[in-house]
Image (cartoon, rainbow, N blue to C red):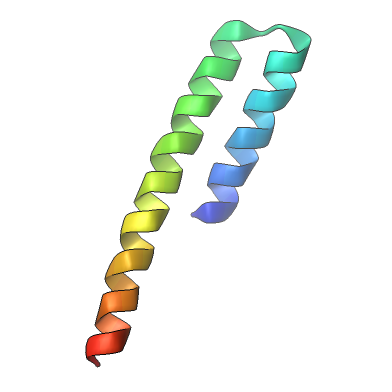
Length: 52
């Protein structure tokens, strides 16, 4: 999950450099959503690992 967030972040940065505003905005949003999902899943597994 974190890998895909990083991939979309890199796509957004490259698109922003070349001036593709719509693509950069879309890739940035996808990267943000994937990163938040990663953090939630990481937190859940961390808590479950501590409880276990």
